[in-house]
Length: 310
Image (tube, rainbow, N blue to C red; front, side, top):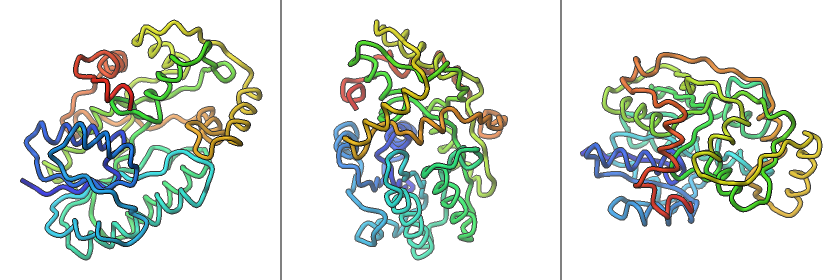
C-alpha cells in the first residue's frame, strides 16, 4: 500500500511501470505530467489511478502530493526538440523542484532515472542537460539508486521504435541515413520497469547502474526487425547522410516539435558503446531477448488499439 509518486509518469516508462506496479498489487499511484495526450491515454488505460496535469518546472499544488509518499520515481525528461530552454525547464528546473519536495516532505525513497547518454560522446541539448540533471541528484544529499538505461522501446513508445513503426506504415519508402550501421544497445522497457520495481521492493539505496541492452543491434537491423514484426511492406532505402540531415533541417522549419531532429541524427551516428553489467543478477530480473521483445511489443494480444495509436 505504499504511496508512489511518478513525476513524468505518463510517458513510455511511466505507462509501462504503472501497469506492472498494479499487477504487483500497488494501488496508491500518483502520476504528475504535463503532456495532455499522454495523460488522456493513461486515464483511459488506467482509470483507477490518480493522474494529475502538472508543469513540474513551476511551483504548484502538485507538490502537495508528496506528503505521506513513500517512493518517488523521477521520470520526467525532455528528449527531443530544438529549443534549448525547454530542455532546461523540463530536465533541470523540474528536477530542482522535485528534489525540494522530496526533502520538504521527507520522502524516504527515490529512484532516479538518468540515461546512458551521460557517458556519450555526443554534445546535444538532451545529453548536456541529462548530465547536469544527474549531477544535481547526486549532489542533493538524497541517497538513491541512479539508473542509466540505453535506448528503450515497448508499449506506448511515442518517440523511438513505436514512432518509427507508425512512420513506416505511412510512407512509400523508409529512408535510412548513410550505411545504417549505427550500433545500438536497445533495452526492452518491460525489463527496465521490473528493475525499478526491484529497487523499490529491495530498497536499493546507493549506486549508479548502467542498464544497457545485452545485444548490440545496428540501426538498420532494428528497422528490419520492426518491418518483419509489423508485416509492413514498405521498402527500406539508404540515402546519403547529408541529404537525410538536410531533410530533417527543412522539416524543423515547419514543425516546432519534430519527432526526430538533426541533433538526434548526430547522436545516432556517434560511436558509443555502453557498459553491460549483470543487471539480471543484480536486480533478479530476467533479460528478454531483442527479437522476443520486439514481437511482444507489436504482436501481443493485449497490445490494444489505444496502445498502437499512442
